[in-house]
Length: 225
Image (cartoon, rainbow, N blue to C red; front, side):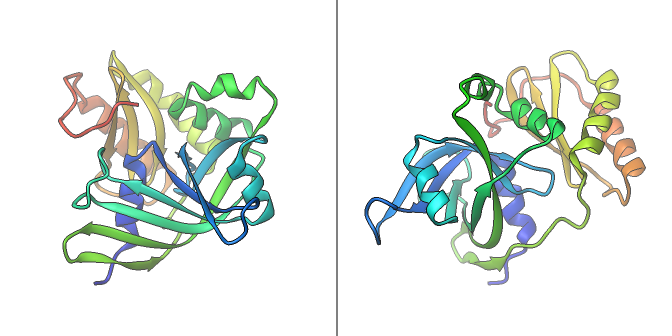
């Protein structure tokens, strides 16, 4: 069955952690799997903050080929949607705006950054195995977003949107496909319609979405973050 990569992006954006599989440097030929939090950059590429002492970090430095498994929702049942992302995971130096984006989604990571042993890695996806339910599965090549915000532009837009944020809501991130917010501690993805074609149009659509957003108990099915 033909799978659109937008379905992969949708599922990745719902997650906050996944199972990262690496090639074991200690036991040649064996896989090594770790449960790790991740944050997506503006191009929907996973970012990780890893300790130099961790087994998976040593594995990646020896062989950057890896896979990331993310489930839709919790529990890991076989009838749940899931995606396995294949790609290379390499050390990355983040600019201040991209690091700030990471910390908006994973605020506890600020403590790890003070230790000096942690560094950022970025996964560059190559292919994905998507399973959306019975009969809805297949491989798909990774493809970039039709348009991508750089971290500086995103930061500028979020500053401008901050004046429109209702009480109890914080804005985490923005891209051409949606707006990520936290409502009373609960993560929520707000699709943006119509799809914007440029930065000015994106700001207008996102601003309109925030104006219409009423503070209310989050819908069932959203996840705490």
